[in-house]
Image 1: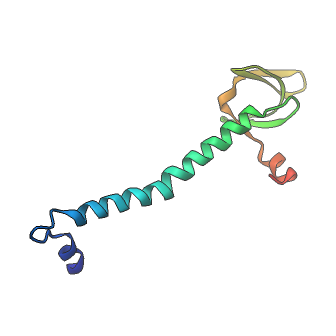
Image 2 (image 1 turned 90 degrees about the horizontal axis):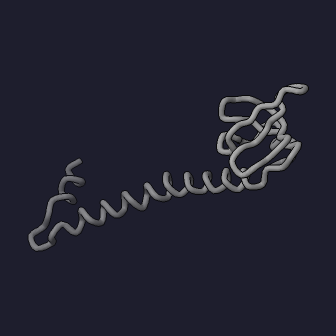
Length: 105
């Protein structure tokens, strides 16, 4: 603790350079451990939603499992049971975990 306090104290004429180095270092660490992985995950989800196909099994954000029967720019029609179809927003669709395990993705 005393070493850290000594490092953070300004030396005469230094002008707080050590404080800036620590601040920049914290930002770099946050970028590589928090921001970058989140952006990568968002890009993967966006690419998945662009590649949706009819008769593909998916899960909605609410946990409803279904098969895609129709796709437009903003919504998707899912068949969740025989002759039971629902229209949902395209942004609320995620990959079906069972289907991705079987295909190896």
